[in-house]
Every structure is written in structure tokens, then in C-alpha cells.
Length: 129
Image (cartoon, rainbow, N blue to C red; front, side, top):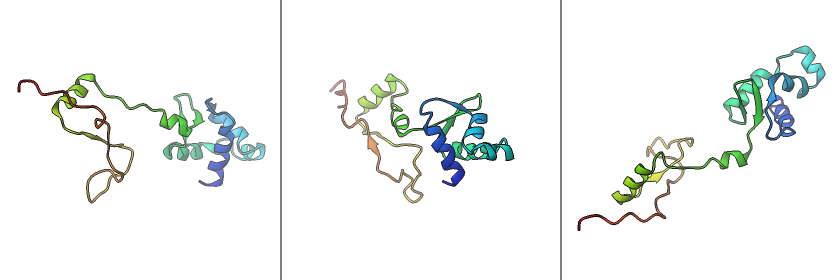
């Protein structure tokens, strides 16, 4: 993280869960002399921060800092209960892995171990026999 990115992140820390306009960030984060030299100095820096997923933006050009708590609070859930029931009945242990993690090119799986979510749930008894 370079100095400009750190400056913007420090400014956005003061506005924890509120979106701040890009113009306001350009004005306040670098000081008034930086703003007078170039009124749009923070726009490429904000784009880099978006690419690194350190800030998030809305459609109006407002930005806020992404906190660890917000990242971890994303709840994992099934696409549909029918799929969950089918997988339970099959008796197979289907591992779930995070698509955001890099894949191991040799093994073709996620670099970290797969975390099975169905391990705690017992499969439904087979019908018939």
C-alpha cells in the first residue's frame, strides 16, 4: 500500500460505515494544497483500492472502507433446499471451497483444505432396503 492509498484509508476510517463521495475524499484526504494542484487526484487511487477490495463503492461514486467484520458476516447458504436434500440423500460428502482463494495448479483444488459443510449433517436413510 503506497502513501496515497494509506492516506485515503485513514480518512475513510473516520467514516466507518458511511459512504463518502469521491469529491469529498479528494478534498479532505490529501489536504487543501493537494486538492488545489489536482482536484481529481484520488480517483485513480480509489480505483486501485477497489481492485484490491479494500474499499467498496456504490453507483453514485461514493466509497467506504471494507472492514473484516463485514467480510466475515457474509453468510453461506444453499442455493435451494431441494439441492441440499438431494445431496444429503446421496450420502456423498461434498466439500465446499471458497472460489476467491487461488487454485493450486498442480492438484486443481483450492490451496487450502476443503471445508466440508455436510459433515455435521447425517444423510437421510436410504428408501427401500
